[in-house]
Length: 123
Image 1 (cartoon, rainbow, N blue to C red):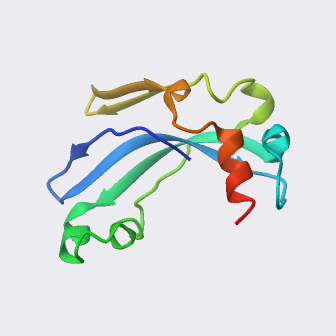
Image 2 (cartoon, rainbow, N blue to C red):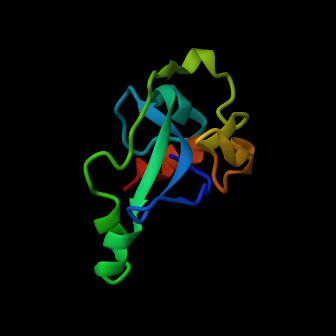
């Protein structure tokens, strides 16, 4: 999951940010970083919404604010891996009511998608 802060706050106390989400299509464990993208089926957009008011009521515990129905809508489509030759070269824009709140690119990620998949597969 690619996370770039797009901190817009709603009246309900939720915040959100735009993300690029990878969809795993092939299972594996101890995946080498060099082979990690072979396990990706495709990519889609995600709206990572956090219920900050719920987090605050529970001592800042992020898990509580991330597990409400509808807090991470995905889609509307999954773009297959063959259509995105480089997942580290994707523009990401977040608009709220037509106003750009975030504009970035996946090249600014701390860790590339392949490394994240390799790390997660070793857990």
